[in-house]
Image (cartoon, rainbow, N blue to C red; front, side, top):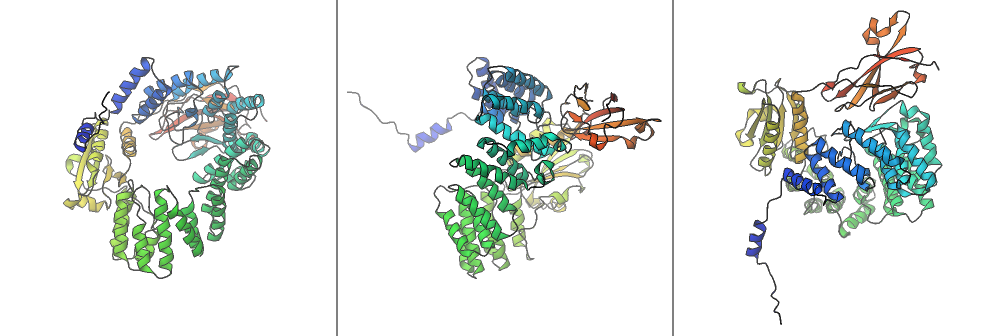
Length: 632
């Protein structure tokens, strides 16, 4: 009989075992290993997706392009192609993205058109192809979607992308950036925008209706797009339109939880915009009633307190504290609301206890300082300072906000914790006195203190970024204990803080407090790339087959374009007599259509030229190109 000996790791053996584990490989080592796997033909799509993220983080455009083109050619049906979020360039090759690749974009466009043209193309491939062209060629994207919908009505993937495209067309949305959408005023005046609204209004497809409602409500609220100014809305409020769409979708599919979640999100956004706290409570309660485990209880309980409904605020505060597996902010807001009720009733001891209890054991998020402000106004300074100090350890990337609040709380003067925090921006433009040997150089200064646990790692990032730049970049470390006059001159109040001083001796940027490593690298790299700015080349003009349309090829690195056009009269070209009279048309894509209603096609002959614009400034201008026009 075989004896089974249990294998138990004692704490000592376990510690030796863990210490013996190999350190996490560097990005370069991970890339090398994965590239070998895919070269040997043993890869799964996830290997290439992992490579895409590694290449994105290392900003290797060509490496990312190779993997993305392979996936486009061989696995065009994967859902990741429609998961490129705002500013995330992993699956996004657009020339105006944060990691632009015009060459890769054009090659991928050819592949997607070839996929979509196949008679046996799957609906997921058609949907992915349409999503790829959502900004570059919306008309083509919509045409392949409509054909697919006619042949296969009710397909979820087709309906989702079609709902997205309808909203983009309504708003004339031409491009997407890190935190904003670019809208073309001319495009949203076109009949296509009105047709897109009619397409959604007349639809009986709950998926199309729900997607359009979700996109419209998100873009209108989260990105502050002024949809009310768009003719396709006919003066209607964007959130009201979205509410009607999704409500009709729920009538068709009353048990669809995703549609109810979309409607709850719309009510939540409407509540955030509401000025009257009682109306805000009504909207948030409607959202709460739609879905289980609604995440908006903090907003509801705070709104109930502001509306004078103490009983409702107490009830929903306890709902937050009693919910199982609740997010960490529920504990914080539950105790905060109970503390505010106690403070309003004059029970400061309970309010202080609730302020202390509102600091959760884990999680990283900005705190509400409403209760802290009320206790500070009541003279309970020590309790507030203790609360802020404890929360500072919790909020990982506060960008100096907690140090700023602690400084305000310690000040003998009246402190307003709700005042806007400028995170060192007041120092931008100042010219501090630097050692002579740093004159004319770019200087990166890290201000630190003894309590900073991440300063060494952050400074290593700064040094590496400086080493990768030009030779005239200097790095310095200044400790708070030095009482350095430079820190006082720049009013540094958060540790760590990084100050970038340009060659002219002026402060160009201040990165206050703790920020994610990648954000720090991107901020520094973004400035150091300006040390040797390369002017964008002139765009190459394309002969357009569409009447009164000006087209050109994309320029790598261009974030937008500016078209100049000129008319000729009996004396010759107008701009030859006065260059200030040249007409201009801004563009986020690589074409513009002249607008007859604005008089842009009134002349029989025009000439035009175009240039790209990047963060480094305007690029070279193309040669003038003459165009004959048919008068309207």
